Image 1: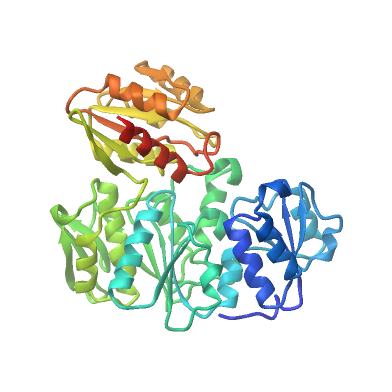
Image 2: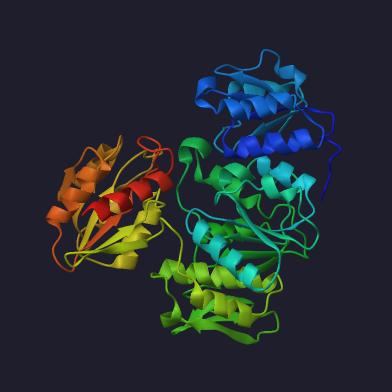
Length: 455
């Protein structure tokens, strides 16, 4: 898009100086904005060399407090974890500042083509697979967004021939204004981040911004088996491409017996692969593959390339990731299972004889659906983290009492090893965020794997 008019020579406040905030500051300075950074973290927690580099570029910093004059900013760029409801952000908005985010700014200053993928669960797996399909096709591809690399860190250098395969969270999408991908996708919608969005309607509205600016020339890939997704898609102008494991939408992508099929707009059936050719387990991953194939096909990639990439795909780290076997017991790392629905999905994928490790930052979730499905599948529940008691309370109400508490991950893994019998599976799928004990879910997952290796 490359619309720099509302950035050049403007006074911009960046709120949050993590990975996204740093990338935004770097690019905004480069294109000629006057940048101030605010972060509640004390200055001494940051690399002094990094701060020196930015200060030499003219960036000003406010640590541990808010800028004294919020009326002095033309624009406020929020990092994904920062709520627009903060008082000082609302004050800036009331005084005329545009409230936006790194994804929107990235879109404005770059020239690349966007594929954008959102949903409560499955985003990282689907985004990673789409990235591998695009790379196999020979397109210059950047896999960015919530998956790890800030969009703005590559968007400014992107050309009209480049593709940015973007994992987009509700936090990133809620501050977009002009963002318009070529192909967008909503994989599913289940309760999550309600401590931020408050209601499912508000959460869905944030997700729906992924297709808000698409026209009839764009495509929206949607989960036809998810009632919330179908409801959101009713407001779309883009061409609708449903995927399903229950029905056979045309055009769309679907499961036909043991075959994964993509139907084009003329009704032609193209085989993606057979179900037994997939290296990733579970019906949820069949859905992820169907979505990835539809996204790629309607972005112009041939089925031969899609099929080859799908068959080669081994999944992503921290998402039902096989970690090895000890004394006949398999260990899986699903640290990315940060909500109830994700953990239910992981349990369904494995099936039975599970020793489940769960707990952490509950994000105001209701754990009743998780507690309801434990009997017959989970032999023992090992709880850890700040809000573990909330899972315990839900279990007690449902009459499931096969649980124990542990103080940390190493104790959890030792206890699981002690309890498990040959043929069992130990699954870390916390159903909670990691922030009470770890910096992120990746750190939690790596710690689990280290503990398994110690066995």
